[in-house]
Image (tube, rainbow, N blue to C red):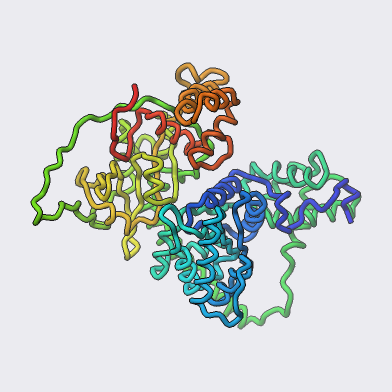
Length: 561
C-alpha cells in the first residue's frame, strides 16, 4: 500500500518474528549471548523472560538460525499441554517414533535413548519452549526429570524457557526449588531505551530498503512516550503512522501522525455506558485494587531497601558490558598445611554448617568485605553506588547467574545471595573454596563452613570484582591511542606459546589481528566466541597468565612474577 510511496521493498514494521529485523540492542545481545552459551553443552535450564512484545520470540528465531551445525532444536510453541502431551510433542520435534497411546515412562525412555545416541554421534539437543509461563508446575517438574540424564562431563539436554515475567515467579515456588537451582543462566529482556529508539527505527527502515530518516525528532519523542520502548508497540504504531502519512501525501512522520496512530492501535471501548450504580460498584472495586497495589508497593519497597544491593550500594549491577580487564602477575601466598593422619577409628573433621539467615551479611557489609579482599576501603556513605566506585578504583563489577562450576571457572572471591525457606535473604562473601571447605566473610569475621550448607540456600546469583586494564583506567603505557590492541597483543604472545601444539601454530596465532586472536582464545577456553575482549575473556586471560589478583581456589604452585 504505502511501500512504493516511501520506497520500501517490504513492510518495515511487521510484527512477524523475522530475524532479519532483529535490532540487537545491548539487551538483545545479552539475551542472545545467554542462549549461545547454552549450546556449548552445559545442560540444565536457561530462562529468558520479558514483558509482552519485547522481542523474546524474535531473539529465539535469530538464535535458531545461528546455532552450530551439531545442535538439534526442538521448538514447542504451545505449552498448554499435559505432561504426557508435552513429552509426545518433544518426540515429534525430535523425530522420535512413538505410539500415540505411549505412557509417560515409555516416552521418557524413548527421549533418553535418543539423547544417548545423539551424544555418541557428537550432537547436542536443545529444547526451546516459548510462552513458558503457561506451563503447569507438574509439567515443569517433568521437564526437570528430563535433565537428569547426563554423562560424567555434562547433561545431555539443554532446556530453554522463554516467557513473561510470571515465569520467574513460578520458578520461585517451593515445589519447583529443585528446578530453579538447575537454571544455569537467566536474563530479563527489557524494553528499548529512549536513546536507542532512533537507531532501532533506522535499522528497520534500512532492512526494508530505505536509507535516511523519515521520523521527525518530535515524532520519535512521542513514539517512545506512546510505546514505552516495547518493540511490538513501536512497530504497530509506526506502521499505522506510515499509513496515515501516505494518506496525507506526507513523506515525513510527525508527532500528530504518531498520536493518531497510537489512538487507533489502542482502540476505543465499545458497549453501553454503565449505570450509576454499576459505575459506583466499579469505582469501589478500583479503589480496593488500588489500595492493595499501594500496600504491595510499600512492602516491596521495604524489602528492597532492606536487602537489595542495588538500593543500598549499587545502581543495579548491570549485566556485564564488553569491558576489558587487566593482567598482572600473581603474588602467591606461601604456607603449607601439614596433614596429620587421623586414627582409623576417627572420621575427618567436617566444616561446620552455615546458619541461614542468622550468619548472613547485609548488602553494604558484603560489598565492604568483597572490596577489602582487593585491598580497597569502601565507604558507602561517600560513594553509595558500589560499582561506580569500583570503576574509580580500577575494578569492574560482574553480576552473573551460575553454579559452583561457574565460580571455580572465574576463580575470584564472590558475593553470594542466599535465601532461606521463609524467603529471608542475605549475603556471604566467599573468600576461598577447597572441596567442601568454604572460607567466608560473616558478621562475626572470617570463618570456614561447609559449602554444601551454602549451596542449599544459593540460587545461583553471584557478583565478583575484576581488575580493569590500563587502557580503561587511563594509567600507564596502554592508556595512549591504540592501547587496547597493544594490550591484547602483548598477552597473546604468551598465550599463543602456552596453548599451541606447535611452533607453526603459535606463529600463526601471533600474526592474527587482535579480534582474531580473541576469537581463537575464546574458542580454546570454551567461552562465547564473539571477538570481544569482555569481562569473562579478560578474567580467563588473567587466570592463564597467573595475574596478581585475589583467587578463589587454592594455588598449587608459585606464579610467575
